[in-house]
Every structure is written in C-alpha cells, then in structure tokens.
Length: 232
Ligand code: ADP
Ligand code: MG
Image 1 (cartoon, rainbow, N blue to C red):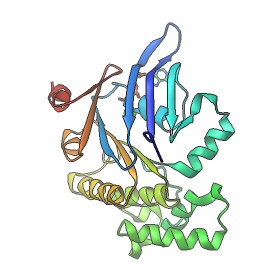
Image 2: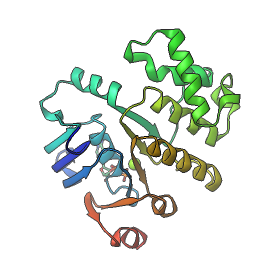
Image 3: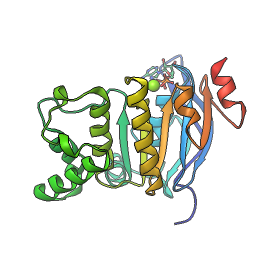
C-alpha cells in the first residue's frame, strides 16, 4: 500500500444558509498505522471532521481520499461498502442495542459483511476477549458499567478488523480511570496495526497520543502549540 490512509485537501464543510463554516480548508494526512488525537474545544468542528473522515458526511468542497479512493467520486452505496470493510466507529454515548447481550451487540459489527451468524458470534467472542470482557459476553448494556459499555462498543467497531478506527470523544462520558482503560485499549489496537484517530476535548487523553492535531473554529493546527492553544 502506498500513500496515506486518509488524505484531506482543502476540505470545507458549511451548514445552512447563510452558511456556518464548521470546517475550513482542512489539509490532513494520516498514514497507515498512525495514532493521533484531534483536540479542540466544544463546537470547534471535531465531529464534523470525524464524520467527513468516516464518509458519513460529504464535504461542501475539497477532496477526501480514503486508502486511495476518491470519496467524492463514489456513490452512497459504494461509500457504505467502503465503511463496512475499512472503518470502525466509536462514539461517546456507546450506541449499543439495549436488551441485547454484549456478544450480539459486537456481532452486529459484522452484519453487513456476509459472515454467517455462527461465525459472527465466534468472532464477537474473540473481540470481547481483546477488550478484556470475556467474562461479560452474556451481559446486557444495563448490566454493564460505562467503561464496560464503551469496551463493548470498541469490540463492535474492530470485530471486522477495519484498517481505520475513528473514535469521537470515546472517554467523554467516563470517569478518569475507565477513560484510561479505554485509551490503553485503543493504543493496543494501534500496536496491532490499526490506524486510530481519537477526537477529544480532554487534554489528558490527547497528551497520551503520539501525534496531536488541534482544531479551533473549524481551522486545523499542528505542532507544539496544539495543547497550549487548546488550553487557552
Ligand atoms: P465539536 O464536535 O467540536 O463540538 P461540531 O463539529 O459538532 O463541533 O460542530 C462545529 C460547528 O458546526 C458548531 O458551530 C455547530 O453548531 C455546527 N454544526 C454542526 N452540525 C451542524 C448541523 N447539522 N447543522 C448546523 N450546524 C451544525
Ligand atoms: Mg462533537
């Protein structure tokens, strides 16, 4: 594979009329195997950026390539296919199915890949083991702590072994200790080869990432000033 996994060039996203600029002329490359934090205050455009990277949304202008694919030239169905095979998502509020066991919640992550049900469950069990929840496979979300729910959500995101894991404020609803466990699991997945992008407004979480990109008022910044800028 050559070239970055994510390549964004002058990506702008505006909402409404008159337009609110949520993201302005963003240039960003994320290499295969990287782990980075996108850090900025509330309303700075972090989720907008993540939704664009994840092809859940399309830019108003600019170019986004995922693993070499020019997403602007792809149909919605083609983008769904790209997501199903290449991208896993983790959100602040877990988005688990209530009343469904951890095992089946994780197996849902393989629903659109054509894997038969028995194998979906077998692979879900392995994914839960990877996040340290082998003893919780039959628990339902309301029988799990917040940190455990987020680990189920991570297992669901990675059960199909996507090249790219996108996490939007994955520790935002957790206490410090559960948050640290989640960050450690993301780091382990990265060590195993996954490219991981973590969106956060938490400077502690951002500080544990090997690379940080700042965002403020829809404008990206890089380098040493990112954390200082996010603090002010
Ligand atoms: P963050 O995730 O950093 O809190 P967002 O990307 O959600 O920020 O939002 C960035 C800006 O874009 C905010 O000013 C927000 O109000 C605006 N915005 C986000 N989504 C929409 C939308 N669907 N319609 C209109 N404005 C939006
Ligand atoms: Mg957000």
